[in-house]
Image 1 (cartoon, one colour):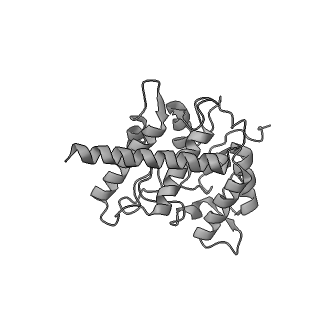
Image 2: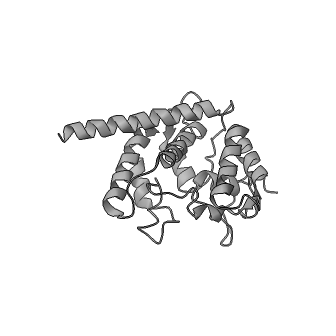
Image 3: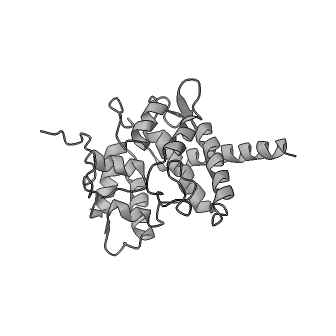
Amino acid sequence: MMEKHEYQAPGPNDSRSPCPALNSLANHGYLPRNGKNITANQLIEAINEGFNVSKFIAFILSHAGLYLIGKTREGELSLEDLFNDAIEHPVSLTRPDKDLSEDYRKISPELLDSLFSEKNENNKLTRKSFARQFIKRRDQSLRDNSKFHGLSFLQKYQVFGEYSLTLLCFPGSENGRGEEIDVDTLKSIYQFERFPDNWKKSESTISLSQLHNLVGSIRDMVEDLDKNKHEKHE
């Protein structure tokens, strides 16, 4: 008999989103494995149980998703609904911009390799790694996507929030939570949407204050890197 949360690859008719973490929750049975007709309460419980993210954060994420796709009244969604300009956005770490490629729903091996190239000598990605990759991807979009003129304040918070939750939920060690992530761990989540065999969720509940502080830290790193880059060109 299959364990309740054993990995199971999605079938051809299963629904999946632009978020590797949500897809991983479905692939491990925390969410319905077909990814369809998911209620807000199911999302909240899955995010909380799967990652030990606080139910308050899970509530915000779940109801924001329903609101952004116009399904507040229905109260449920399928994961693929989130591609409809809800959590899908330009400057993705793993997918091309929607305006630049018909394959924007698919993981880009080139973008993954670009992200992994930011690893340090210990084969880990840090907060600064994500900040550098954000600048790289943003500048690519500004150069190649004529419809992109920068991210709004809320979009930046969303993007830096995604990086922050990645660092908080999948660290190289409990002591490294929020600081760094192993490249192999990130490959498992981003490329295969599967929890690593040796991965354990956070021992303590991940709080809104932790998330907010980490978002601010990454934002400040981006601003400092941009400032240094501009000073070098003056």
